[in-house]
Length: 303
Image (cartoon, rainbow, N blue to C red; front, side, top):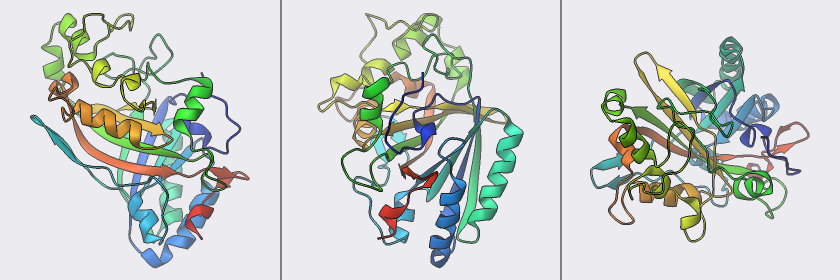
């Protein structure tokens, strides 16, 4: 289901994940050239096939600030590490044909030179939609079951009440998780279900799930204030390695941050069982500007 809003958001934020995606990550190369490059970016981004996210470092390089934007915080819990890998600019390319995204990525890379240089590309895809219409992780479990919908999704995901240039924006926490499929496949089906806290077959939550189950570690309504986010994650693969590009959009970074701290065991010493078969290898936060008259609205950065 697509969540409707009259706010000037990048439409791809609230839409279901596409059949294929490409994440292209940039760093700042020539700071003096940034304003011109970002003007070209604003013209190239339509918010649907290209969703743009600006990192704290890029915002700071422009001499600007965005209320609520901060770098991803690295964490270390009992036996686990959550890395921080700051990124200046991330473009999420969305579509149905991988070849189209290749050409789109090349055009964006060219448009942003020499101010920004392309550092990394991650290709992703939607894997077998689950009972609620969301894509599945490569473990077979549906991702985003607890996503808010309708007006609740808009409230949880988009900034409101801060004025032009900020309303309709969103914040994003993005992590690349690498799966250990041998460890996952060594588990019994019952143990796999207990790790997530849901039955893979019908996506029903287990009444007797252990405290370490992923659904219990991330129960959004169990935080104060509540920690609702809109997940738009996609599986990725690169040769023999694969996993999940975890993406959590929110009207602030609060929801993701408190969930991640609990997952890492920093709240009560209980580590999310998901860490037994998967590890985050990157982590960054971003501001997703709103749209204005069909182009990316960057007025908040140009004051």
